Length: 240
Image (cartoon, rainbow, N blue to C red):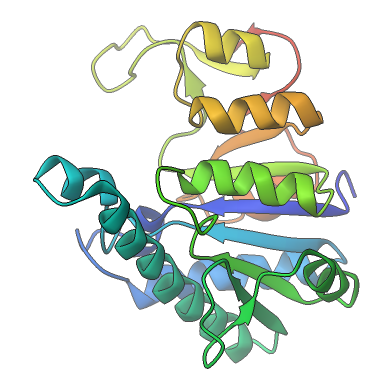
């Protein structure tokens, strides 16, 4: 295998499919199926899931809600997604643990780094909910932080596009897709792969990021096996 321990970053929007809001059970089941295939080939898998399909703190803050309060509501939304994904995985007989940065002892474990690593070593999927537990930090930053803490080989960022482009491919038909990028290029050109804090954390800890299209069935497994899919951040700059 190309990677032994990986962190998968799922946006909340990835779970809603074409519904426009909430959680699409079919999409969750498809994601769980791919994750089960990854686990069965022996890869240790941790997941950070967002909550944008239910609540976005930044938008609520822009509408007048206190930013810290809005972010806490968003953290709770990520836990809803984490528990939903856990249920889908356990229906496929994949042992799964949800750990939250905010104590919710009746429904999930508290985040404890050593316990998370032990779960991974035993072949359990670990889903990190409630972000980092702090307002003003995104789940992208949480993904970078948790990846560093559990000593992950790589972060896989599942999106709705097939990689990172030099401009918006929806508005520019001549946009070019990168096959690889340096961290410095991402920061300098503000390519929005992840927020700046997350990119800096990955750069400092030498954790590559693979950006790929989640909507193509099988991409999770193929990416983790090391196939050239999407864009890898952490190498040199090259366009396709």
